Image (cartoon, rainbow, N blue to C red; front, side, top):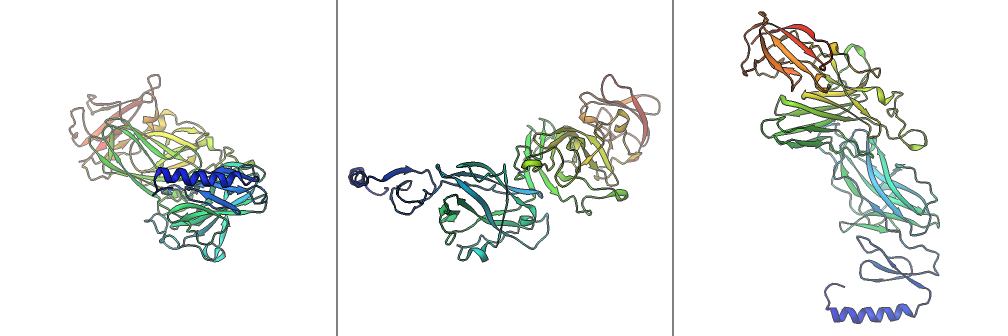
Length: 445
C-alpha cells in the first residue's frame, strides 16, 4: 500500500477486514514471495497477502524458490538450488524446462545469447525437459529442499535458459521464471522470461602477499570445490591467479603420454609469478554425484575408479609427475601442496603414497636464466610431507643451499646468487626420520 498515507491505509484495511469477516469460508494466507502471485478465487491485500477460497479444490500457489549461481564453471554439471513448499499440499513432481545453447568451443568466453524474451509457446521456446533431483524428489512430500543437476551437454557450449515446472498431486501445475526482472510463479508459462545462466570455465581472482583462499565457483552440489589456499608470504606482492577446469577428453590440453588413460579431472593454474616463496595448497574436485539410490558412492562418476585411490599429478611438459595428496570422500576433493603452478590432474595411483625416492627430481640439467623454461629442479610432491629438507652441495662437498620451505631449487645459493655452471649434489629427506636420498644435477646459465 505504498503511496498513500497511514490513515488511508488503516481505513482500507478496516474495510477489507470487514469484507473478509463476512466470508465464512475464507482463510488468510501470508506468503513471503518476491512478486505478487494470484490464485483462483482470491483477493489480494498488498503484495504478499492472498485470500484463498477454501471451498475451491485449487491449492494455494506454493512459494517456490529457485536460484542459480551467478556463474557456472564446471564441465561436469550445473547445480541449481531449489526449495518447494506445497503448504500442506503434496508435490507430485517437478522438472526443469531448459534450452541448450549451441556453438562455440569449450574453454572460451561465455557464449550465452541474450536472455530469451517472454515465453509465447513453451514447446518451441523451451523444447527440452529433464534434470536430476539430488536428493531425489519422492513425489509424495509437501516440502522439498535440494538441487536440480543439469547435464553438462546442455550448457557447456555457452549457458542455459530455463524455467521450473512443478506439478501438484491435485493436478495443478505451476511455473517459475522471471517477470519484470523479478521471480514470478504462475499457473502458465506464457509471459514468463526464463532464467539465464552463462557458463564461465575460467576464473580470475587476486592473490595477495597476506595470503588467503581462491576458489573456483564450480556450481557443484557439494561444499567441496577446487581452490588454492596460500599462506602469507607465498608471493611477495599482489598477483592475479587464473583457474580453469579442463576437459579430460581434450588431448591437446590434457596430454596422454604413451597412450595411457586420461585423468578423471584436470585443471590449469596460472599466475604472474612462476613459483612461490612458500608451498601453497591445491584442492582439486572430482565428480561423485550419483550412485545407488541417487547418493555419492565413493566411485568417480562415469568410471569404476575407487575415489580413495586418486592422487594429484602435474604435467612437466613431457610426463605426468606424482605429487600425492589426501582424499576427502565427503567433499569429493584431493588436496596436495606444491610450490609452482602448472596443469594438475587427478589419476588413480594404486592407493599408495609416494615413497621418499619418488620425490627425486627428473631434471638432470637446469638453466636458471629466468626465461620460464627449465628454471628449477622440482622435488615434486616433497611439500606435501609434514617435514622435509633439501641440501645442495658443490663438487667440493661445501653446502651452498639449505631449503625447508619449498620443493624447488632455483639454482641459487643461500645468499640468493645464481651458482656457477657445473655439477651439484643434492640430498633430501621426506621427514626427520627418513633416509637421505642423494643425486646429481647440472647447472648451465
